Length: 146
Image (cartoon, rainbow, N blue to C red; front, side, top):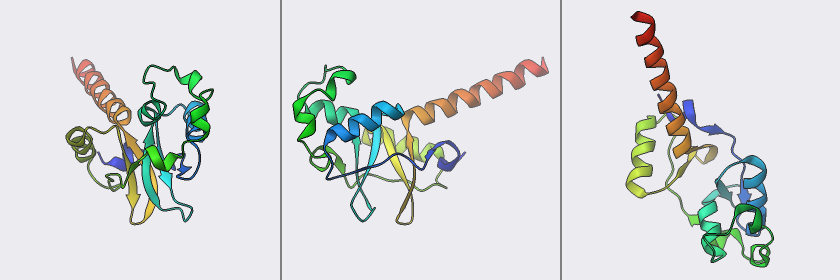
């Protein structure tokens, strides 16, 4: 199984010069916790996570629905709190390689790049879902042969 088989294609993105409230709104409306950050010329420059935002707001215990009300969220730029120059992976890389990268670097996602183009994002959740699906298929095969 390769990254392309389990990644989210055409991920929602934000621009680095936007306020973090924009990232919050997108995360809330799309049910995600990581967003690739693009420059105005559409080059990948970083990744922002809900954790980055919580720390920027100096309140890791603030509930998600309260973040957008936080005045600071309207003034802090995404580029100041994102992870710049993120580790990336290619679509045809084995999914195990992506999992190893995330584990060894203690990160929750990897932008998926084909040359200079962002084509997807793979998260811990994507890998866990793939693992569960593999286990369920294996169980179904085993139950069918008994």
